[in-house]
Amino acid sequence: MSAVLERIEQTRYALLGALESRDWGTITELDLSCRVCVEDVLAQTLDNEQSVRSSLQDLLDVYRQLIDVACEERQTIVDEMAKIRQAKNAANIYHLFT
Picture (cartoon, rainbow, N blue to C red):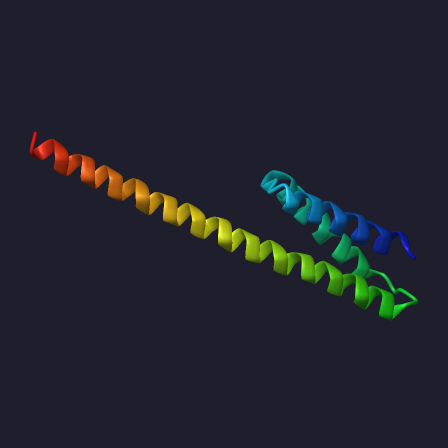
């Protein structure tokens, strides 16, 4: 396996680990590294196109997982903010009658 494909695999595993722990800072850094790896793959002529395709497909699957988890996290925050707003409004109404 070429060095570029090994870097993609290492980055993919690191992304999975960061995703599991919800370490968004590390995910951001790994995303930048991943972009460099993909650019390197595109710039090189590799012998085994099937290995490249498989490696990039696996990476794409991780990114799909990242998007799903990020959307879930975002929705959780939206729900929490709505609850906070409702509680604040209820407190304001309560203070009007006291």
